[in-house]
Image 1 (cartoon, one colour):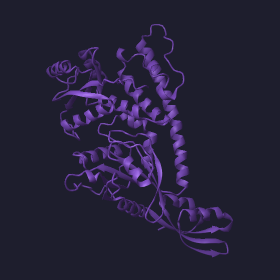
Image 2 (cartoon, rainbow, N blue to C red; image 1 turned 135 degrees about the vertical axis):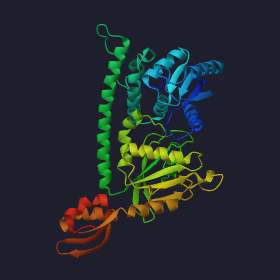
Image 3 (tube, one colour; image 1 turned 90 degrees about the horizontal axis):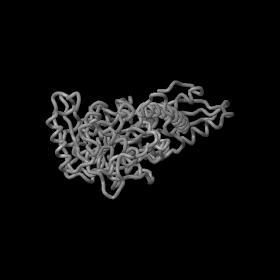
Image 4 (tube, rainbow, N blue to C red; image 1 turned 45 degrees about the horizontal axis):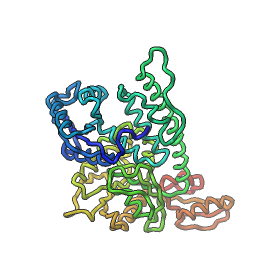
Length: 440
């Protein structure tokens, strides 16, 4: 789909923020901090925030979500601020969205947090894979919310946005409304996009298998958006990954080779940043990308320690890792942006979740040697020993083991090379047929 939500004229849209504190809900951020984050998201999307309001509700209004008195207060504020878009800091149900749109009228648009994040992702997706993932998430979000406001979506999308191709709405059947035509067309597009992404997923799986055969451990960077992951990968690899001080500056994964203190290499991959209340459609659509996290040997959880809500951001990332079944993976807590700290380094309750923690400044390239040493030591705990005899006629296997640095000692015997290996557990199966002793 196109990024048609927001004006790209010289004059930015004027946005009004609405926050809601639900009863008995475990909120990661306070209502003020969550609205401040929403304001940053709006700014990233090119919207100028001109006002905000919030309500703690004890009982959800089945029609308008918030109380009628508060809704009228917001409508008055919106008129006074001359806002053109109202942004809710929650994902609205289709019914609430329809009812609120009626109250706002045609001159003011309504967006919830999920729609805003989806639009930002659409703006920042730089690869065809990223565009596919975002387009699928957008359609899946919009399908249950189709109203007359969203008709002709497929025609607006231009047949797949950046990927090109044909498209457009099919012929209308007897008695079909435009809404029904659009719904059927969007369902067809969702099916097509899922098929294309399955091809992407299969391609990624093949790529991962080839990477596994290289014997290089995979280390994945995870963290809250704007924690400094791209800056860190640039500092460690002298790569040229786009990095900016804003939310979701990069979406597409980047993998680079990094040398550890023992002169062994690892592959370091960047992943999409997380955020509280990340839309579930987005997590599902980015499954192929997020599998980079699940397939990694080690995670580096990068945290902006200078942020007031660093502890809450850690919790948000942990929640997302649990959602993609990655919460049991070995990981290191990387306390970044220490150069921006006004006081002492804050302490966090590690609760045995992490293999260790290290303080760094990716921007100033401070603490990187300590980080790499901790990575080396942690990966070493995942290594195992294996004693093998490699027949002379399989010299390529011997060469591979030598190139990967797995050989600790060797002797020549009549039937082949007798080797003592130290290698990652994940690589053990590849050489077990040559084994003469069980691994440790």
